[in-house]
Image 1 (cartoon, helix red, strand yellow):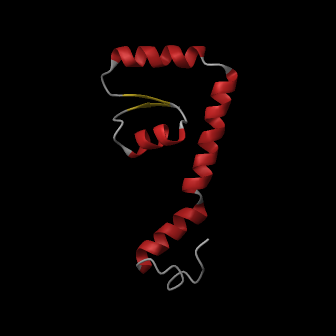
Image 2: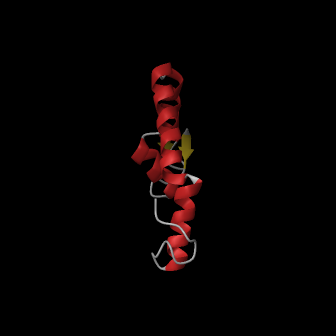
Image 3: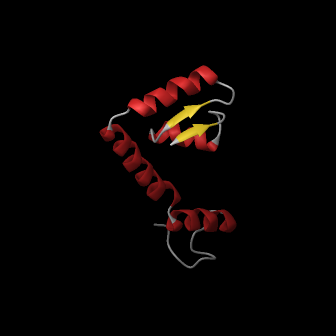
Length: 89
């Protein structure tokens, strides 16, 4: 994944935290050129590893169960059983 945008953003933090792709700040032409060269010359293993990490991050951080739990916790003031009738996973 190539993310073009500010590093200090939700997507930028995910790219860095999980090492799932590359990041270039807006307007950074030399940086974009360098990153595109890195991607073009990346090995199949490196690309596959980043893809696997991205899938794992998606499942760990953004699964339906995790998002619903977080949403219910927010609504319930951190009492996960009050409204949704279930225990925290």
